[in-house]
Image 1 (tube, rainbow, N blue to C red):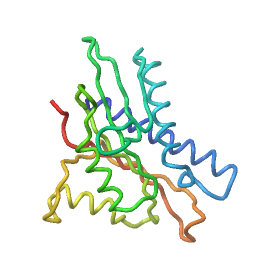
Image 2 (spheres, rainbow, N blue to C red; image 1 turned 180 degrees about the vertical axis):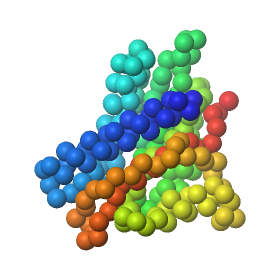
Image 3 (cartoon, rainbow, N blue to C red; image 1 turned 60 degrees about the vertical axis):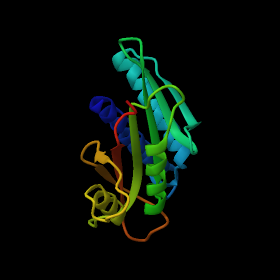
Image 4 (cartoon, one colour; image 1 turned 30 degrees about the vertical axis):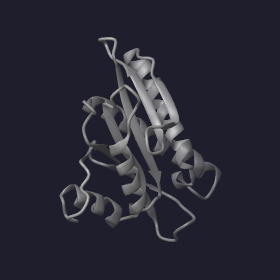
Length: 190
């Protein structure tokens, strides 16, 4: 499953960089002007196209699917070789806050997909960060993973080393970059 998570992350990075270039060519802003659900849609479509082209798999991808306590941004159903289906639930955040990250992480942990198990849960964030500085949202999530808060501790692990790129936003006068951060949340339901 790590290779599928990496494939999804690669698609997410590609979409973020492509959208950044396209938006910057039209406006004074970059990728952070994209609505969260538009980003989820584009990542789902890019991932499905890559899986069809590279692996010959026709993926079902659904936006805003209710998985228990609320809608999940993206659900992917990937056919396995044995005839079963691999189910992936993904939550996205674009320029958001740590409390909203936590809410989505909790929602992913509690998500149920009817009779099927959820094989992979992914939290993906486009984090706006001032160039050359660490971002407290990433550090705080990592501290929670390490148990630094002493409170609720999600079971998280980064998909890979986070990729970042310089971008623009009219929200700040200082230069910013986009960090494409993604974690696998917990294990499967099985």
